[in-house]
Image 1: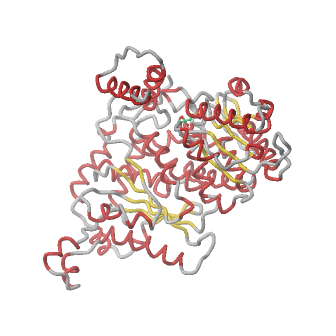
Image 2: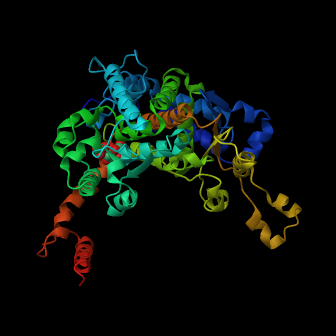
Image 3: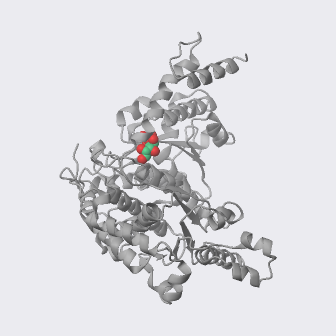
Amino acid sequence: MTMPASPRPLTQRAAWKALAAHHGEVRGLHLRTLFAEDPDRGERLTLTAGDLFLDYSKHRLTDRTLQLLLRLAEESELGARIQAMFRGDRINATEGRSVLHVALRAPKGSTLRVDGEDVVPEVQTVLEKMATFSKQVRSGQWKGHTGKPIRNVVNLGIGGSDLGPVMAFEALKHYSDRHLDFRFVSNLDGSDFLEATRDLDPAETLFIVASKTFSTLETMTNAQTARDWLIRGLGGEALAVARHFVAVSTNSEKVSSFGIDPANMFGFWDWVGGRYSMGSAIGLSTMLAIGPDHFRSLLGGFHRMDEHFRTAPFAKNMPVLMGLLAIWNTNFLGAETLAVLPYEQYLKRFPAYLQQLTMESNGKRVTLEGQPVDYQTGPVYWGEPGTNGQHSFYQLIHQGTRLIPCDFIAFDHPLVPLGRHHDLLLANVFAQAKALAFGKTAEEVRTEGTPEPLVPHRVFEGNRPSSVLMAGRLTPEVLGQLIALYEHSVFTQGAIWNIDSFDQWGVELGKALAQAIVPELESDPDPRLDHDSSTNHLIRRYRRSKRGL
Ligand code: G6Q
């Protein structure tokens, strides 16, 4: 296992100690005061990177805070870690793997090496194969077993092989070919498959089995069910599989033993982590939906942010800054979660996508050296599109007892203008961020003539931090930049916490236990159960109920 040399333990770094002391000095400061004392704050504490604009002025920090956070990044050797990633070092130490999703979006002709071998040409070859296939399907040239063109595409995948494709499909629907219908099946629960396929004609349906390992229980179970469904629907023709199934995987042996022609397999590599894979062949459904040119623009957007992250000085580096804001809010202000609030309905699956990216990456409790951390790591990311959330959970953000930093995401232009909708939408973004920061004092509430007993209920304390992230409009290129921004912010946080942001051992235990329990649920004679009393009882109860007892 290769382990990069680590800097001094986090809480012993000079900048960390200075931040802890500094927090004691500024904890009482209210955003009202910070803004009153610095009239230019709202213009000054902003940053542009590529097509993205970030207003971070409504965070509870001073220039000194920023200075110390930037020093913390230096002391954490963030620069060296960024270089190590781009150099193809095996920075995923516990799995001994390089972490090179940036190679997926590197332009033709550039070079990124893994073990001395330039991986960019293979990436480009797969992209070209995807493009050829996409054009055939989109034009109707690719025919199903009975000679009909494909009308429906069903992606079978889970986790990193599902969340990126679903999110990107929803986000870029505006650019998609509306003649094709896209469905995404991930859950082991059979109702997911049944609902997704109930109105589809097998003769017009293409399944993409998206699985890096081609051994994931959920995806393989769904793929088997899909195979049966297809063969049943096409009159028992096993040959039909060849025209209706393609695979995205790193495992060609398993793909061919499933019955998929390796010619219809789109490969990727073990240096692409599942949750970082939507720019690889895992994005095949995205390319089928929006076409190869838009897919290239999406990759171009990713690359633009990759380059910004790699080259911009930390003080002007948007992902670094966002990562540092998360560190400040999590480790010093004590925030436990972060709400992602896109004011763009097409981004409705973006918070779910980010949950995996952020929480699977930074939900770790030991350092790279295996020592328990003595500080908090990854916050809980969650969210829903605005304005919907305003009519539900925003109450707690405004007046609850917890501190919940928010990322508002909005666009200057709607994809399709419709009356006054966009001005009304944007007014709400600005108003929410303002209300969270400045609130409403008791005096202000009284001035409005509020009866005294109601005054405490109508006071908004304010001082709730938020970022406002904006771009011109939601294009494939902008989406690429937005995702890469969060990816690299996650990297920044992980580097400072000195954890492995690229493994996910935490998902293993439950999987292994489930494998052991399956035969206990399926066996005919009552099995001997050696679990704890709760698990034993749950299994017995389920077995009884299943038999109608
Ligand atoms: C992501 C995780 C995980 C993975 C799924 C699907 O980083 O590794 O979510 O993507 O378990 O794995 P397969 O693609 O191998 O089916």
